[in-house]
Length: 157
Image (tube, rainbow, N blue to C red; front, side, top):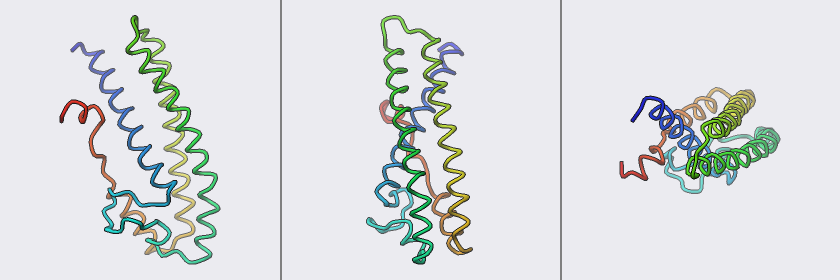
């Protein structure tokens, strides 16, 4: 494979992997469930319960969560559109690298915005947690591990 082709394949792989991981995470957060990757042993556990939030902390948590989840959902909607456009262009009769790059750049922009939103959200959540709760949340986040890329799974790796 030529070097530009390899770079393109690696970038596409990264984008798809981030999209899958983000979609799983978003779905779990939206349902209020802790994903299996956290390995907490409680199928129906939710983060406020796991962190043992007080009634006031839960109220603040819900206030923070509403807008955050709506913004993430809006970005995921846009990412899906650009991802479909990019894949359609890649597999068209005459792929246009410029169009592919435009869609990739749009996806990257939305993903960067999502990452910034997640960081901002975690900082806000941090402010309402006590030290033990912060350590518990940090531990959960550090235990998250990607399960491999979609391309690896599709190709039997």
